[in-house]
Image (cartoon, rainbow, N blue to C red; front, top):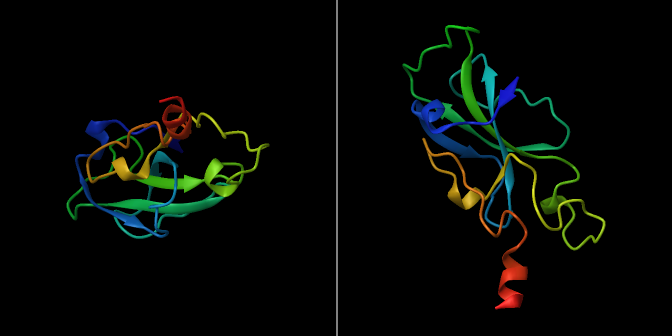
Length: 129
């Protein structure tokens, strides 16, 4: 189960762990997943690949509703722009999925943000300037 993270959901984050260097990625998808542990690589059951995740503070409580911990997962699906650079048939040559954010804007306790780079419009804006 996953949801879009809100600032209040991230108050108990301790760190962001990157499994891949996100420097050259225009965007990553972010989701708030319910998992069994506060730390460590979460189980990943989507197509594509996990790029990173958050770890929680040692005393972060379990959700009263589910008994699980809410942690962010950062991932890419096979058809995402970073997986098909330069491919004119890539569905996100311009634009990005709803949950896509620029990885440069991700920080502990802060929801990632959309930017011209994550939306695939940075080059268009620069070319039109």
